[in-house]
Image 1 (cartoon, helix red, strand yellow):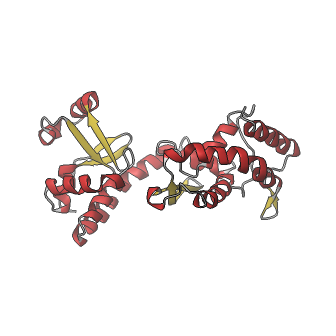
Image 2 (cartoon, rainbow, N blue to C red):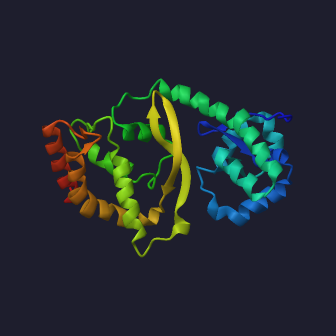
Image 3 (cartoon, rainbow, N blue to C red):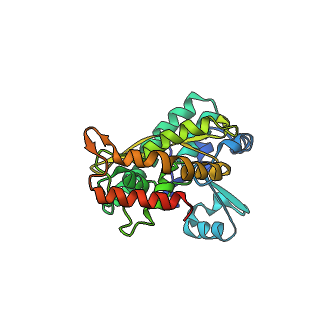
Length: 273
């Protein structure tokens, strides 16, 4: 990559200015802004971009005085994440832009991801059940809709005295709930495929290595309906069977007392405690 890119970080990840995106993709800043305005509904705040104004913008200018000339006296500022940079490259419908993005990803974004991964590995809790690892690795990106089971299981786990559910190594309860939820949601009248957003998130962790897959994010407006489904259908009817079953010949929850404790807590949860 011939251009020199000033490193900018926000919210613990590398980002780019609109001017930088335009320069690297060989497009006018105005076109980048126009594409964003036209496709804004497809961009997710906090995932694809950050919007700075007021005190937050003032702090940013203080942290990066060298680029204040670029920022100038703008009353607000957009910062683009790796996902945002990719979406801009696609919106330009230019082979050159996509080629440049691949270079940016290897030389700019992935370097920061490796740094973050190293930092996270030092603190990665040694849980034997994988959903906790996924929850931990996605803690800053997660919101309701990423395997909604993570939110629901967390709520149940927080009510256990031990604050943990001891599933075997081979069990992935969040995936079980996610599959059942996906089936149910698609049968509902409010389901609209255009409202379901997809992003790559950590779905598996092994020896500190993160494997990402495309995961669905459901609109927050569906939250109440999904929560009701979990409380009245999944947990009372299906979850007890899941924890009492086996996967690859191994009991998902080996301790009978633990199974009983989980079932009791699920019943309390389903009853609305």
